[in-house]
Image (cartoon, rainbow over all chains, first blue to last red):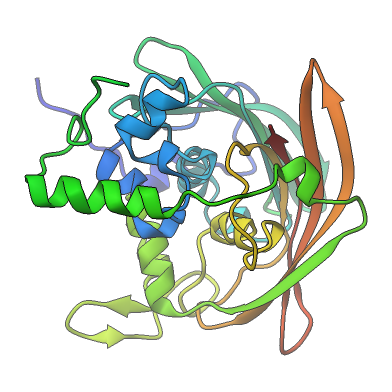
Amino acid sequence: MAETLIHADAARITRDTPVGFELLGLKKKATIQLMGSRVWGRFNPNHWDPVYAAETGLLAPIQTGEMSSAYLSEMCVHALGPAMFRNARISCKYVASTYANEVIFTHGKVVEKTPKGEGYRFRIDIWAQNEAGEMKTVGFVEADVGV
Amino acid sequence: MTDIRTDALRPMTPLQIRQERDFIESLKEECQTYWDMVQVGDVLSRDLTITPDVVIHFADAVEDFNPWYEGWRMNTWRIPGESPFGGAIVPPLMMSHFVLSVQFDHTKPFAIGSIHTFHDTELLEPIPVGASVTIAARAVDKYEKRGRRYVRHEVTVTDTANGTLYMRELRDILSL
């Protein structure tokens, strides 16, 4: 079955976007090569070494929470564009570990829009979960659109 | 003893496995728990010049290929980049990740057993690629919740040259 490609502009939140609008999500795999890359420090082997992770009681190496936050913020940049970079807020709580090789889906839903200036301040619930629907990260974003 | 293999998740030769085990062994050193390492009121601060290369390094590690972050491109190398703010900018939460290098005193052994559990981040202004920033982290609370110990920090990221406040954050670390 052919996939439908959606241009980013079509998914952008505007003044007219209603409460209930669902953001276009992203899909990422917790790839061990990326989890073990130098940018994450390589000082905690729980993030990339299966042996060390097992010795500390983990099922597998776990991603750093920042990777999950980065996935969620990438989704929000698609939805909010420049509004994600000025006077925005993003809050994330890591409620469960993301294990190597899990596939993570990001989600977002507009839950509130408050008049501000010429536009609105949007509040968007965001979350990341695995293929089984288990919640990994939950939070929210606030951003000014058209203000 | 575990039957989990070093190469269980990625292919390795015996040489690579030996190198990996040697590296992990080298990380083992006496360290304090994060709870003991930090006292409320402690302030740590470091400066960082956000080079185009380190931005690419971060963005690639989360497979975010937004061209707004590109102040470096293969073949051309350093470029001014393009974004709605002019030149290339830094991904929204890249600086939040670098806070780890400040709130964990980098002159001491890493506090094994600590886990980042929460952040609440205000993104106040876009950060241009190439900016030098001062990352400051102040320990504001240590608390216990459901038998677990947490250390809370307040963080600011400001432009070292002109004082622009780019980011403010609250973040929690769970400690052994």
